Length: 164
Image (tube, rainbow, N blue to C red; front, top):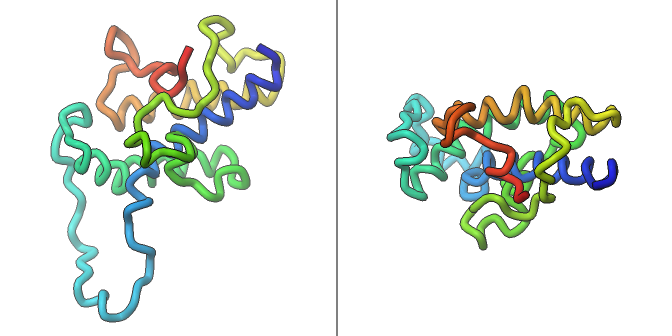
């Protein structure tokens, strides 16, 4: 794998992860709305997670992604690269056909080779920067948000979002 294709892979992975986080946003009404809707809005209701992520049904997962995962990860991605992730939505992680594939992963992210890890130790500074971000921020945060461990057979892995 060339350094250029690895950078592309890391970008696609970042995009896919962001998409996972923004899946629910696509179904949300635009902010603001008209005044007739204002009386119906109750912003004082706090979201309550219904179950562990693995035990949620599709609609519960979508709502959890909208309410918790997307805003959390959007902040991390925009802090990492505000320009590249200024428009943070479902396709970043889930691909342009996210709805068609019901937000399943892996989807449309560049395959990761089984060797060459960790990318944070790459001699290419851009690859190393993305690798460090994915290893130190994205993977542990997503593991926590999706109720997955970082070790053991059910651990959160790069290959949850990328094929090998």
